[in-house]
Image (cartoon, rainbow, N blue to C red):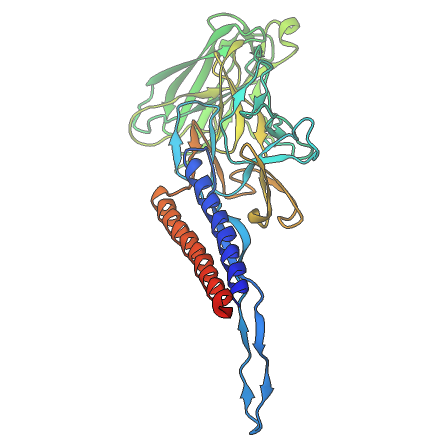
Amino acid sequence: MSLQSLSIGVSGLRSHQTRLDTVSNNIANSSTTAFKRQRAAFSEELGQAILGVGRTAGGSNINPSKVGRGVSVASIDRNFSQGSLNDTGIKTDLALNGDGFFVASPKSGAASDQRRLTRAGNFTFNQNGELVTANGLNVQGWEVGEDGTANTGELKNVQFDPNAQSAAKATTEAQVGGNLSADAEAGDTSEISSVVYDEQGKAHNVVINFENTSEDTWTFSVEDPDGVLQDANGGGPGDANGTITFKDDGSVDSISGMTNAYDPDGNGTNDGVSLDWTNDAVQGGKSLGISLRDITQFSGSTTSKFQGQNGNSSGELSGVQFTPEGKLQLNYTNGVQEEEYQLAIGDVNNPNGLEQQGENFFTTTGASGDLQLGRAGRDLQTSVVSGALESSNVDLAKEFSDLIKAQRSYQASSQIITTADEVLNQTVQLKR
């Protein structure tokens, strides 16, 4: 019996040593980016049967009785609860606010060709403009099309051209909005202007004059001080004029009276005025449509203005940033913003089934389930926080408390061995 006690004591030493190792590892990684604390779970060893289930002479049942054979480590579980997010001010430092993992390329030379998963977002751009982890692995995602939608399919390395430039773009659409005062009297005028761009990125001014002619009726005419625009008949921009009438609710009723109407949707309803660029060789036959449909007529001040236009001059790359959806956005000196890639966010059904690879990486296993890829803020209730890193979720106060308990449990197991040794010694001395 004392020999069994020795074995039980040894099992306690082994198990609590593992617990000590686990707690010590948590404490050592309390400052590791996105580290997830671990916990050693114990289970009782299969006991030795002393009395089995049976019946006495009187027919009553006998309760089964077994003596345990010690303890063993059942599992090392990882707590994937989110750590706090700490601002760093570095745009390439990324943190996930929610579930999921960043996806990195397989490690070169590794036995497994599986993609690596990590929540440690201390990334950088290398000399080729590739987004890489601290260990040099490529962070992966999807290319973003001109419409801003990610082309979800084969994953690619997230990167950009450090020498990228934004090409000049001719203005083909401009929008006018705001209010023409319903309190205006016949003869009252208002003038607005905007910068538009030709195909070479040169800036030109366009001026629109409004004049109130009667109740609910305004005329307008377009002027081009630089002489680069003409109406549909080849006349000057001043020939591009017309009349706007308003409904009782203040919205535009009709835009009429000009020979060069702007009808972008082709429904036969004039939305404004269309002008041709005079240099067809440069502009490639492009025209400039100015929409007036968003103008209103309410009582109060006249606030009409150009609300926007789609042209721009050429520009140099001025910086990069990541949006909450994880899109890599390039910013140019001409004000243009382009989205190049969107980060892929991976998730599994059972995160505790992931296999730890070291260096803050995990890979999937049969226990974790297959890797599921999605987009932050759309497929997953997760957002990407730029300029921040996720801290470890280790609570030092709890870890030190667990360390003390593990130490005492280890001491108690060692005391079992000491006591069993004394019992054996007394048994040996019975022959004397």
